[in-house]
Image (cartoon, rainbow, N blue to C red; front, side, top):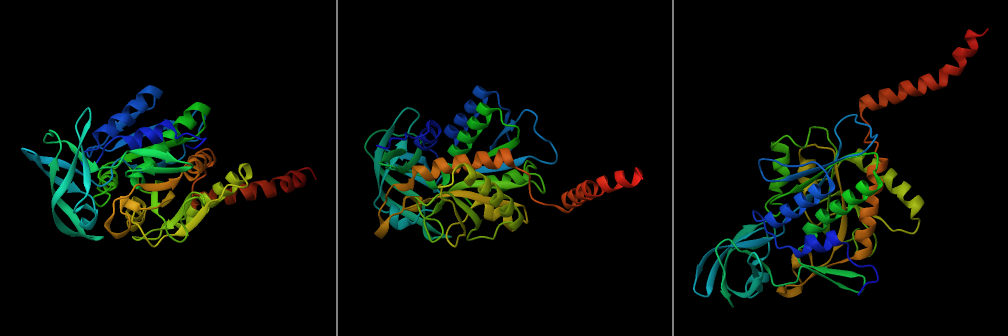
Length: 371
């Protein structure tokens, strides 16, 4: 085991079963977190959760910095039961070749039962032939509405490496809870909104819901937090990743510039902490969706191997990432918040230019006035 245990938020988020449309257990976790800390929380018409931290003495010019993280990963829901066979509607893309003979867990409210997949219908998705409906053979009773996940524990440590079911999507939600805890404990002078979205596994529908509901304001900077598949520029153990783009789109260059400044200040306190910076060819994200709409967005992420729990040659494997990468991600998020100045805009550049003119000419005018 690692000498640095998992944060309780990371453990709690990764342990709870979830799936697109069935995020209620993580919604409960986030709402209880907000209540216990006195943070305002609300839900939009699509069920997304917004938690606001309004720091003491913080500037309130323009919309606050927004963070976006998901509450779901690919999973299923029991829609029919007949004897020891259950029919499962599967949501979110997972290659059918990885589910054809896989073992799964059917989660009731108090516990789970194991099952194995005996049949799988497919649809064509972004990845190719992905699972649509499953027939599973149960080892015990199950009920309509039970959540179905791969038969993997939620999370466990091997040395300094985190093993998990669904961390690619969910580690961002845990990181935002850790971030809000840090801001609350230090009474940081900043204002941030943390959005926890549903149905990320279905075209990032929850994130689009934030836009449709008007919660994510035009021009409001959004930083998406999540895992990314390991690839060149995003290697596990090499530090958190400042994502400049993904398979959907390049992100906002001005936001990336501001984040680079925050990274530089972070390194003043942690000179040996590695940070990666790359436009990634693999993996789509909520940031890519927002970038396609012309919104000021970037992403901060952790590299994950066996993404979507899909291993080699059709195997189901735990996702793995370096615990140190996660811890550095949370520390970097805190630095971004307390140092946030926002990207340059024409109005901001004009205001800064006026301040420069006043600072430069003031002493000269005073001297002229004294002649």
